[in-house]
Image 1 (cartoon, rainbow, N blue to C red):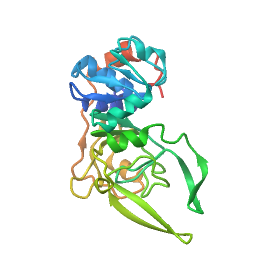
Image 2: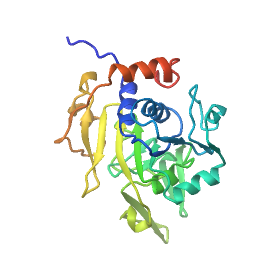
Image 3: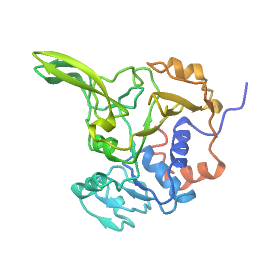
Length: 274
């Protein structure tokens, strides 16, 4: 038997996300793994990246990892503390270079559902068997950030052919037209709806996915071979046909990356222990 790698799938996700952050970018972070990835990037290769969140904090320099977007620890080192309306106006002005998102479901075009599953339509209104937390600003980020990175657990019930409801739009959006109680559905490119940007990558517990330049359908760029993940595992845990021809084993975390994650950024394992 081969030797087990000295890192976890969550640590691998954070490292992959961190490497996608560019120096000088304005990053709409949120909480959890994206926050840890952003902090790691600032320590290593993107010291001029500006971290902000929907609560209104700008360019925070954390001493301790915040638990939520409203945590007072966001204040530390912030050069600007405003409010939600001001922060989201930056999205409208295309000032946000990168946004991180997650959700309960996602389809091959990067549409995300964090609203509910088991949808029924009655009188033009959506009813759900189970409701989730909803958008919370995610729709704005998906529609107006210049780049979007999605982080999700890789399960067949999450990676679906078609999401039950679109909370956050991807590259091609399912639109519903209601006439006399009967719904018609059509697939529309995001740019026809006045949106810019779009999902650039999906980082899951199994690998990293990208979107084809022409079809905008998801394909596998790399997979976590050191963690025992195979391309067959990814295909089996994906609810739609996904391309794997270009997939390569992902570059593992460096000792320095793991040292910062475990010793300085999240030493208590608040988020990295799952």
